[in-house]
Length: 219
Image (tube, rainbow, N blue to C red; front, side, top):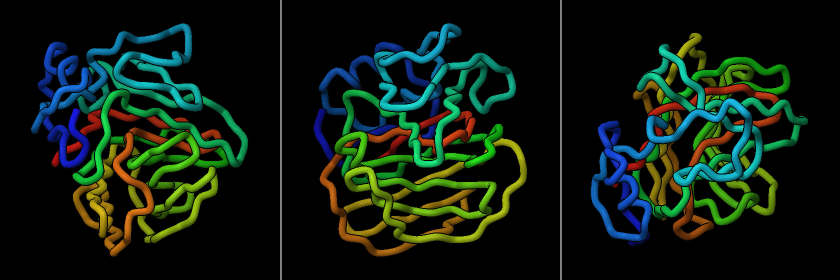
């Protein structure tokens, strides 16, 4: 697969053969989503190290079968009840991007230490990546760079959202980052990228139990 402005739009109409081709190393443009989790078998026994399309880097990620999700019946859910400084990370396998718009729908279920979750991009390792996350406990959205496991905040904005599903999107390239919630840009700032093209996925912190659906990246 060619690194760079490669990816998928918000549509969720992919077939298994399209997804397999997209993740097998070939070049592609505007492949309809690999990311509504309908091609991943539910795992009632618990966490999997790898699902083929996704890799559990940390945390307890499960594909759950529900009717009240944006693209029913399946979504992915993080259930790990961790300590304050635990980061729970699920990454797409076999794909990298250095620019584009990364998007997901998420629903905060509960959590005492932390709630909500976010998107990761330009991931080089479990300890080196960019992150934008929404936290309903703190009523804010923030962007970070994580280097050697340490988060440095790049931008923050207060936001209050109701219960239920919300849309988070990050547009990024080598020089700028924009973060939108429910279609409204909340953060927009110039930034010289500190990492090259990298992997992307979803993230929660500590004991935040959160569901995700319709993960996509578009060039």
